[in-house]
Image (tube, rainbow, N blue to C red; front, side):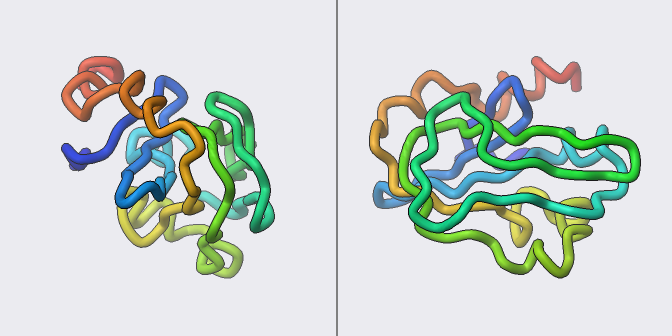
Length: 125
C-alpha cells in the first residue's frame, strides 16, 4: 500500500524522486484521517517550496489540513485534475492524485525522510 520507493514525512506527505524532480502527495493514512475530500488548494507554477513549510491545503467534510513540503524546490507542475475532482485523493493518493512536481534545490533533503517501513511503524500499522 505504501510504495517502497517513496519517502515519507511525519506530517503524512510523500515524495518520489526521479531525475531531480520530486512528485509530492499525501499518504493513504492522511486521506483516511481526513475523510471525504472536497477541495484542494495548491501553489502556483514557479513557486519556491521550502522543506517542512506549508504550500497548500486539503479540505474535507471534517476539517482543513495544511500540506507541508517534504523537500525544497520550484513547482514545475500542479495536478489540475484535483481542481475538478478532489475526491481522487481519497481514491488514489499514492498515484493519480499526486499534488505537485518540484525541481529539487537540495536533493539530500530526501535522506532525512522516512522509508515506507519507518512510516508504517510511525502510524502504527
